[in-house]
Length: 177
Image (cartoon, rainbow, N blue to C red; front, top):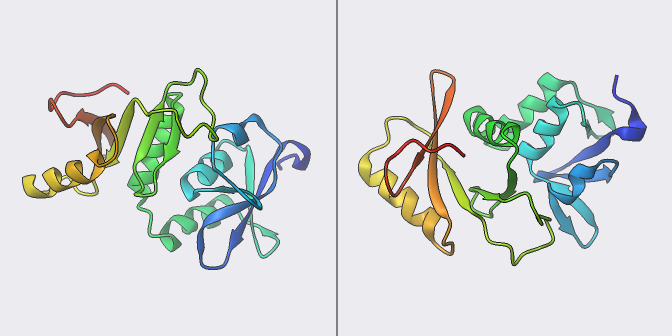
């Protein structure tokens, strides 16, 4: 059982794909989520990552959810399990990630990073490829969309046979994030 005094407590909100932070208790609050006027919210990927690391608990209408129930939130938010796997791999590699409005994963250097520093520029933008069978036109359009408004290196992420791989969009070379 998680110790409530050292646990982030998150609450689902009806019709909102983000989770409301009810109790902030760890260092993760400075590098994850989105500060709002009324507190702090987290994207579902961030919340599930913390639940899997036993740093957070998600409640629905006041009732704590088990891990399997938390994973169901991916489906209810139309977030593919493979996209969450990409996020989890990047976090396990130690990256600071800000999730863009378009759903891309912007990677930042850990030094000097904070969620509130909007002037900080990402080093990479990781784009999840939903299908290994995407056409070249689909990939070109995806990279164009990801490139809008950023000078960061675009990296494509895909999952095949349960293994996450990253490819630099500009060079086609395997990328080690």
